[in-house]
Length: 472
Image (cartoon, rainbow, N blue to C red; front, side, top):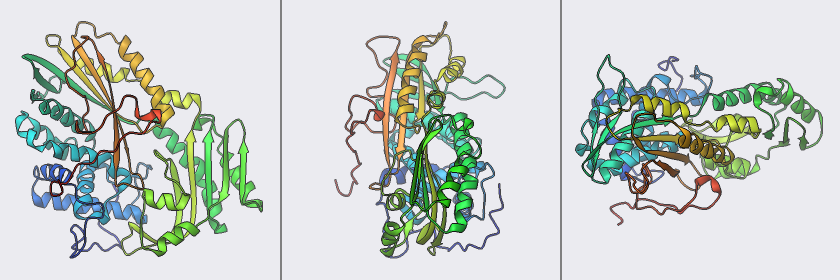
């Protein structure tokens, strides 16, 4: 972790509160507020202030280049306190919105808001608060698994079932996470959260390597350039000089756009017109990073966008906002090789193996798997069928697993909304005609409109918003 104490930035005393006359930039969401306040109540006010300030310093120093993510992944948060970053974003949304980062926030806010929406059920779940406290301690670096367990517990409590977290005993093998009583039968419940895989990250890292020298070759020209590319082969198989050669040829030509299609990729390098973004900036500062900024710059919003941007900008007094843009060098890339799609469409066999080990042989059991779906529609469709195939064939041996849920979460931060999330649920019933939960949704509430199909099938999904109690 870099030193976040020495900085040229000045952090005002009122940076964590709304100033006189200021209103929440994104509106006020009471469910989100309730979820954030619950987690803040689990530590002292002084500890939260200390961790919040450290989180804010890391974020802003990352924005201006004073702090560098040691992993090389460009994270805006310290790896050793990821959960503080989550709560920081949730609090910022309502109470100090200039600090809210929408690209990552769209993953966090729906979870915290869902917990807040069900806050009245927490006291009915044995061990809920104790499990939640881990997020400030042992689980602060990897909070997603525990948050998923909390969502599952609330789903059962919401339907009136008796739920308790199973305490872990030091020195003994891990057991299942929950026990749930349904219609007089006690079920063991195991929860697993599937994160983005190593292959996904290896491709992102490889693209950063491939684009590093070409982008810096463009800088002295003062030209704003946009690379738009679809790779036909795995990025690991792309030559180190492939993009450099394309960029050199483009810079040496008088053309405003150069296109190609070969065995490696199809794509283009073109002059990026900054007039639209400059016109937008005349009206006021713009949040960066953010979908509104990207839409003004590139002319469209792309869900699950893969962008690398190098910019020469004039920051606003708050460096989370941009005042003017002088040069932008950007790459939008997609990995469309069959090998890459197949590897990113990872099945869940290893997750089922882990879950199976933690389930008892003397209780009927239910497995919940949460999957962050950010791989693009082609990848997610492929992954869905691989997962179904694995579940159908998985040998549970002597353990009585009666139901398996898979929840696919697709968060996004579109230009027209502060955040959005689509949740697709599919299940595998080993006892035909019976389901433990009515809907199986963990984040999107039962009041929302549902449709048959998957979020990646291209069909529109009705938008659901909670009504503010003051307006209902």
